[in-house]
Image 1 (cartoon, helix red, strand yellow):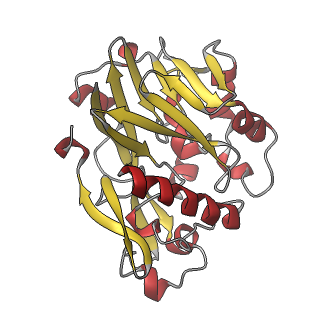
Image 2 (cartoon, rainbow, N blue to C red; image 1 turned 180 degrees about the vertical axis):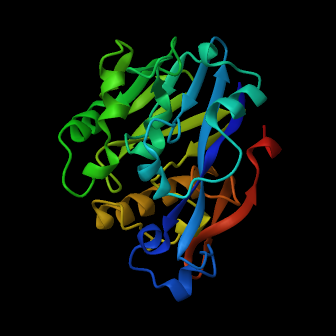
Length: 280
């Protein structure tokens, strides 16, 4: 098995939204904001190569949205999904499977693109099956007013019409060496993958735990639809993570790709941080 960290670009989000009820005077010491209270974040994917499967977890924002929409997020940096895949030695046609942790625009937008004459959309990865939890799909198709702006028809309809959409109905093994669990605090049935790599368990935390700065239980983004459930899910996850020495791989932490955890007098906190390449 091979694992690759895939940077798709960087975006800025309001610090208050990123850290919820935690006061800025506390969180800014851990994850600084700019003069406009914006936190620059990674939009990071994970690529797993295991025998004949080449699996991409999440696809970033993509480039289908108009300039007005994208300007709200101050996209920056030179990295793109396809550029990073190419640097890792892969073409779009090589990808056999896409797993979308959830369908917010910054996690699924790169799965479809404009066709050559920009009259419609086509799959970015034409040979890949696209896996998403059925509950999350149904949730996105009938969005609540809180999340509606994150579920974009130009991201979802091309997947629906592609014939490549595959629904995940149950937790457990999705592929050999890869299990998934559902989490409900951030959004309905977010898919979190647990990857067995050389005896280690690497967990792609997506928006379940967005960064090292979100490890304390109370650090819940305002984006989460069920913040108390998020706290409960984190507490249960930490018990497993500490017992089994899980490695967390982050989708939105700009300075930190991975970390391990430890118990402290203040609760569970980060132990060590490192790049994915250091352990693979």
